Length: 294
Image (cartoon, rainbow, N blue to C red; front, top):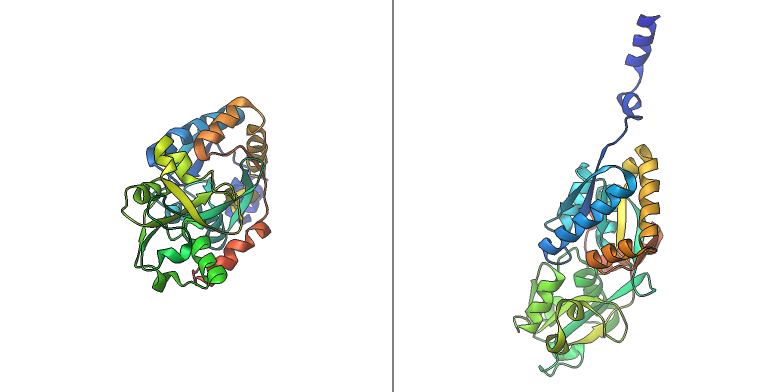
């Protein structure tokens, strides 16, 4: 009988033998939208909250850039990731990612991209920037590159590659805002939370009179909110953990501690369930500027 049992076990696929193995450690990846030290501090607060809610050990992974975050998800170094919209689209193709939740800020599950300038430079419309220098955030940034560049092409018939004098990458939204403020560049593309341009990256990273030195002169169409995602493989193998994670995220916007952590992390008020279909505008924008999601 023992020999028969051993023979049966040897014939089973390896994954079947370990599918029921209980996972004790979860690694969560965070995108570098701003200063890495700030993200690390707030990421640890999130991980502690998650550990307390699940009883699982939790590690934080702070990516150096958006591409590194996607690669960590693809390789299995992380189990969950806070992904910006376009990074989600790339991760679906590269890492077989599965979106779980999207962010809500001030009652809306979307945001915008805006092109900002110093208020005292005399730039009042996008056409005033012909021949001037612009900063983007990152080649994989939704509001800091993909969407605004595609919008200029489709909405204004402006080719940024010939229209602007010089294009640079700031690396993060806070660095981009400072580049505009300090005059290192004439303009920059970053996130905006309202159509009027009264709430955006510059109002979050700058204080008082400094924030007033920045204004928005161009606004894109809405962009679906940034996300929490996993991989389809992880979702299949650890459905119970994924279900718990969705429940935890949904509940964070309903208690004071959870709200404070989400707000500190990425200025999020709450998170709601999302679907891949909602991110089609990012796929369309990528086609316009000929960006390969792979």
